[in-house]
Image 1 (cartoon, rainbow over the protein chains, first blue to last red):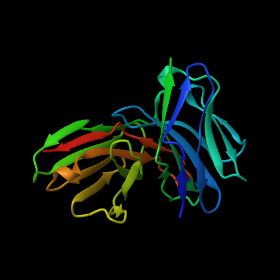
Image 2: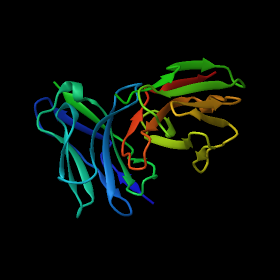
Image 3: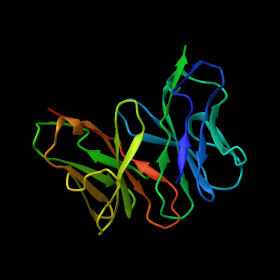
Length: 114
Length: 117
């Protein structure tokens, strides 16, 4: 069975500082990894994905994530946080079997203070 | 591109009535659609996976007779909550995957807030 762990319920960071939202995963075979963001009462917006290739993946709104196979991690990062980045962030994983479903982490609330 | 819509965005109904939620892929064909349920400040729980033209596959613990899913076309899936109860109140989100075995991404609708009184 596949699983995702987001160890932090909430991350607090000051505007302009770098941010990291942690994610580790467990999956059989090669993982497909995703980050999504959710604003209040809205659906999920896709940020970025790792399928294959470079371990550093760049996505929307200046976010990036680094795939680390040995540590089974896919942490989300941004060099300089904005107040508007405050939202709920979900990491998700599926295997590469073609028809598998996404498994989501429990989510991490990011709060960026002015 | 790859936009998924849901209708309605919010609905209030009385206990015992049924509510239908529509999920449409607006600019692509989706052979597979997914229905999720999300409680406040919690993650998404997969309820069922529906493939166009076939019966939905429900996750363990999800009542298939209560949550009826129909995926009649490549651009439309519906979720009907039958005989709704207050505990069915939740945020329901659909998602669609592009047609094709190697499609990686799922695109999510904006969600439907259901309140059962």
